[in-house]
Length: 67
Image 1 (spheres, rainbow, N blue to C red):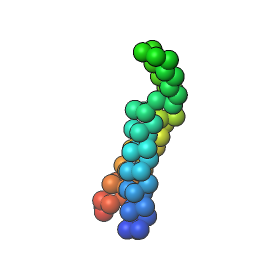
Image 2 (cartoon, rainbow, N blue to C red; image 1 turned 90 degrees about the vertical axis):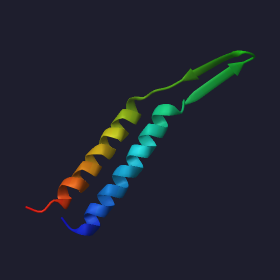
Image 3 (cartoon, helix red, strand yellow; image 1 turned 120 degrees about the vertical axis):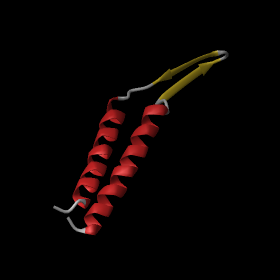
Image 4 (spheres, rainbow, N blue to C red; image 1 turned 135 degrees about the vertical axis):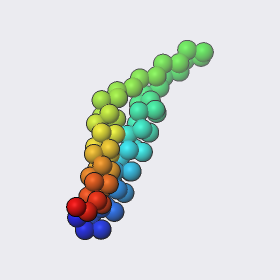
């Protein structure tokens, strides 16, 4: 693999990984009435984004090895 493709895969993988973790932690909707607060999250997309980030980074690392 060319060096530029490996670098792009590593950068895209890191961005997807950080964005997926951000979506996993931050709630999508929040309602607060007085002392009562309700947070709603849907983590399905976050897990998929983290997985794609890990795959892209793994391809970048594995492509770096020469036979």
